[in-house]
Length: 133
Image 1 (cartoon, helix red, strand yellow):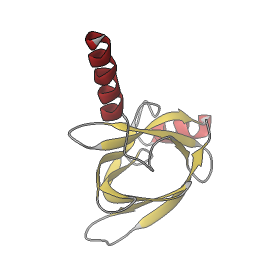
Image 2 (cartoon, one colour):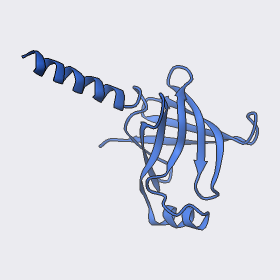
Image 3 (spheres, helix red, strand yellow):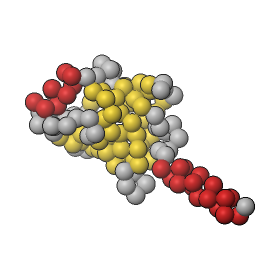
Image 4 (cartoon, one colour):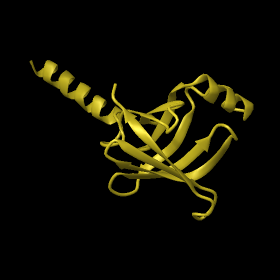
């Protein structure tokens, strides 16, 4: 009985440690529905948004830009909690193989990803939508 309880508790702890923080979990699609990402733990307390599906055009654009395998590539990298429903880390743009500082803000089923060149200059943002699985 105690062994079963310990096993169940251990499994619950592993499951909770492996899942991303509340609000950001799940699969998200970009505005053109050409790329889908899933957030997963990717280091000491960090999470990453990794491509789990991409359209043929997105795959071809990424290849032209030098990213051979778009699917499996982390787009949102090393994100750490930076406030309520906000994470800070970096954003990788596969079409140009460049990484920028960035933030992710969750507003319900909308995610605003924002990347900037340096010190908040040259910023662009994109609103992603949560996909119901």
